[in-house]
Image 1 (cartoon, one colour):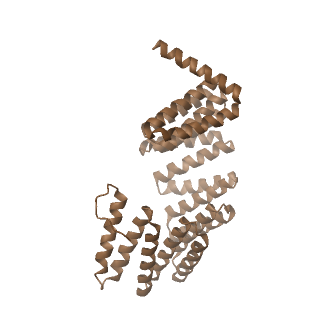
Image 2 (image 1 turned 90 degrees about the horizontal axis):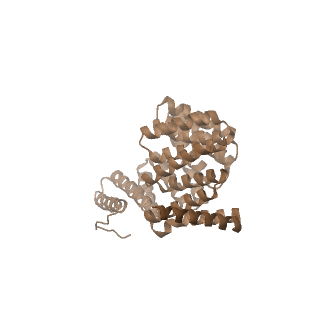
Length: 353
């Protein structure tokens, strides 16, 4: 592997280069194999973030061998878990499963309940990625029980959220609601404001889907306030778009438009591109529900220009795709008629200014 010693301006690459140097320095200390293994783990982590997967795997394998020679089997089990995650990222599920099985066996032999939970959580993530939703939920709930036994409440919340998502993806919304509610209760007890914010957003959005609108509004308003307190504009954008969808479902289209437009402005100020796109989609849906075709086009053309200013011409692509979808849904006659009206209104406004 090559080592760069130049200032790349890339903080991840610079951290990886520093970790490589530390590893090489540790190799000269033959009396400290534990220190070398620690350096290898650091290098592996930075290599993975930098996309150097082969290097990351090689470091983990070497660290695992050192720990095995030292009889440090908890660390061996953790190396196996990290190797399984790498294998999953490389889309090698069979290899990942073999390493998870060995890691789980070791943690069981050691009586490490928290370690077992981490392996089960990873197994659930792998099953979820493969859309084996029932299996994923089973792994997640097994992980949750072990995290509970180990007294790791924050990780227990993570496992409950993952199980809720598996149920939501499977269309079992009522079951998903119960799991999110359990996770929210634990997050409030800790308390963990960041977790409360994340779960209230998910729960409020799901309650909107199942028609629990009153409770959904309370949760989403709480999420919006929490996002402001935590200075998390991306989360506030999500809360606003969920609230806009809720108001639209009640035919309160003016209120929905105001909320979606506020979300769009906030996302633009925060340079939150995913949030901006979501807000634009919701705002377009609201205008369609109101039968205002010209306003739909205004939103999409304006967004296209805004994204182009921010990202260059490739930034227009998402809006062009939305316009193409809209054109197909409306039909050529309706789209052309609406476009002519939009152009006429823009020209009249230009003349007045």
